[in-house]
Image (tube, rainbow, N blue to C red; front, side):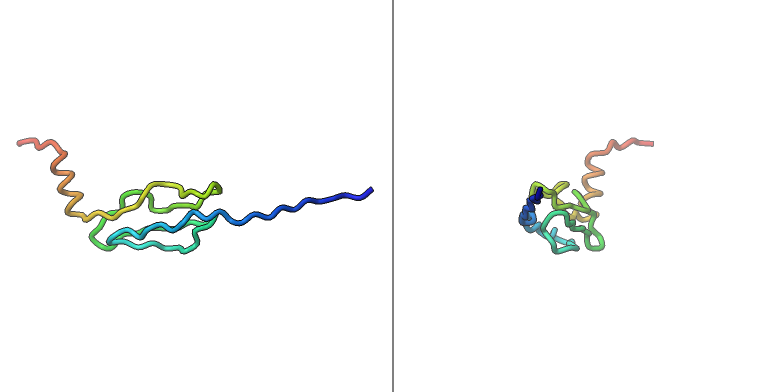
Length: 87
């Protein structure tokens, strides 16, 4: 009695290139499953979105788009959306 073993090969799922956020950087260059990339922002900027994104087995990226926002813009939004209480 002989046994047959079936081996299938598939190409790695490629999630495509992610853009580097303005005023930030991206670490990692592999865009295939199961690799990941890490984002960071330059001094004076705050990261919004996902700091780490992973290439998933279905060919999509985990997380949400990353962007870097200036600290002054964040403070302005905070002040505009905060209640000011007089003492």
